[in-house]
Length: 175
Image 1: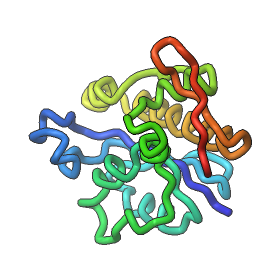
Image 2: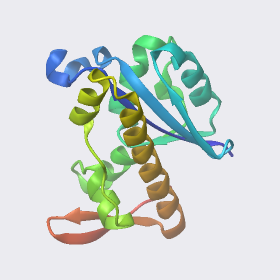
Image 3: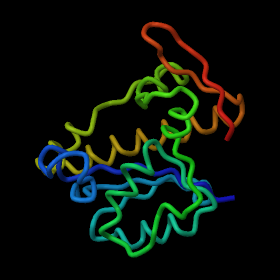
């Protein structure tokens, strides 16, 4: 089974493209995948986005955090393929159905894995604009690795944790 974990960063911020209703205008800066078949990371930019779409299309399962609303929508202008038809586990969507509200990846990472994210999307755009692509790739790689570890933890333990205020709270998962 080839599970592909995905995260991407964009060239623009939501307020620069008219708001969150225009996610498809944010443009791809960098995408990072981790493939269980490959056993490692791959990096993509606009120049290689076709290879990214091919990798996602060949996966048995694509896993990410906010894939359905964000990542797949950012990628929509780059393909005629409907990425929403791919076998996908969107951890954020799964948690939203369980909790009735959105949670941040950092909340899950801190509570479940004891790690924190190294930045955010605003910093990523700043790094991209400053030509610091290596920083964007490292940040994106870290998020992919967090998602991979969360998924593996949930598969093994049938729950992950979130921070609920100052409390660490378990959330049952079925993946």
